[in-house]
Amino acid sequence: MKTIGLIGGITPQSTMLYYQVLNELAAEKYGEHHSAKVVIHSVDFGEIKKHQLAGRWDLLDEIMASAGKSLERAGASCILICANTMHLCIDAIENVVSIPVIHIAEATGKQIQQKNLKKVALLGTKYTMDKTFYKDVLGNFSVDTLIPNNEDKVFINDIIYSELSKGIVSDFSKNKYIDIIQKLTEEGAEGVILGCTEIPLLVQQNDVTIPVFDTTTIHATEAFNFTTKE
Image (cartoon, rainbow, N blue to C red; front, side, top):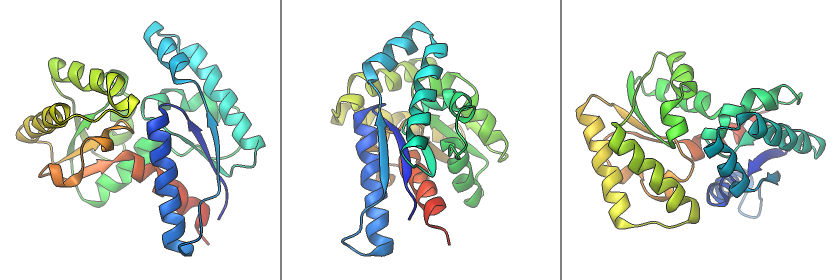
């Protein structure tokens, strides 16, 4: 197995999920005493959030590019950005490294395509839902993207930042997320993308009737397969 580089801390909760998934995959493939070869560059989520709110994506590009370079110097064979939203900075990272930066939306698009779905709902931060980077990538897989209404978008985003990013999981928020997914199902969604790496803390496949695409697990698995292929 080659070494996987993680840009983590966005948030610590999602980074722990990535680390858990990668180690479970390593144990499954190589035996119970094996763990994944991982290098983590953990950034300060408080700084990231501040720049997001201020719209300073130029500064976020600098932070992410620096993290990417440090992972390559540390021996990583590929890089994962452990957050959907921060894929808005993927070009800045790719411009300064010579190793692959595996795109979370591309990995997810492959999984959706394998299930022959044509329309999926997308839940995530307001940046992920409002900006087009996710929709554009999924369009390359001939997949249409449904976004929640404005009121539901505000709720989804608020819960991500006020609860899930801190590891808080409440039944009220879980039920509200499930209700939102049900509404999107009635609008024609054939599947739902958990397009924030913390949402799997709240919603799992057995909570809804349509296929769930857990981007954290999909992303980590894509990297694991890349680094272990013969």
